[in-house]
Image (tube, rainbow, N blue to C red; front, top):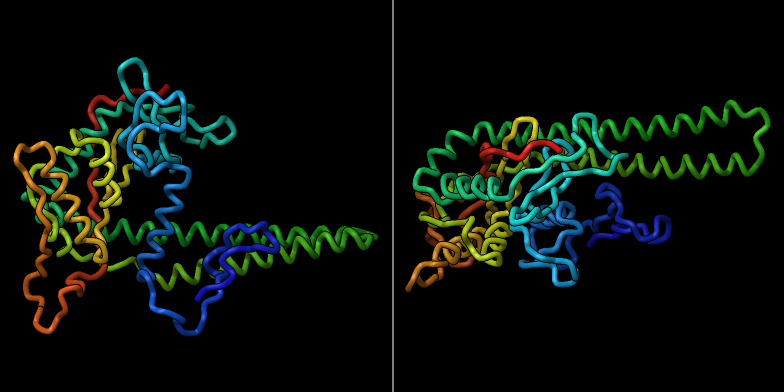
Length: 338
């Protein structure tokens, strides 16, 4: 059981940091999902905020004329914002155009790239790294780099949290300094400083809790055997119907980061032990699309070689941890900066 997830009395019901949650000493009921799956879903929800999950055009918007396959999966590597779809004549683009007050130091006023070029890169990524016959070799070559990148992201997150904590401490110190400089502070002024210091103290405790949680949570262990649970074969991802293509992207937790500076697209998918059977079935369904007479059959996930199966129930997991598959590609002829 968890309490204090929302600040219902002090901050208008806003979500509290995880460090401020109050956990019961022991579980009060069987968990519906594992803690790792819950934490993973929370991060996905934060990344997908204000983006529809349904395929097809936005029927609630009267001016919708088309749909964008990479909607909610594509991010700008410079500012980390989600890129949005735009159309010009018969060509679709994805753009990143922050408001004037939010443009970063190295970010152009706006940047654009053609949808077709990105879809080609995503198709190559899935064909070679996910469904290709040589995926094991590519994974073996990329795993050390992927592990280093995961640790680097973990360290960058900790550095950002520590910087935020230091900034909160400076703000609190400024309140004390302002109180010291006041020659004859009235009661209202003192109460205002006290309220502000109490608010900052609460935020500091929450930030310290986030740092402690991050330091306890080491990057999850990579399980290369997860890739063997996926079918091998041809899958024209770029040519799939929108509903099926979006189902594939969702199942694989696709994320694309387009870097205008290097004109590269960094593709990443994540396989999780808890959902690998459903992910493999989605891949099998996608491979059967567009093939006359093809029938998608239920997949039987085979345990990794050498794993004892005697005495194991049929519904028990064969795999542990997760697997991050990454690839960097250069989309052909990217549209220039506007």
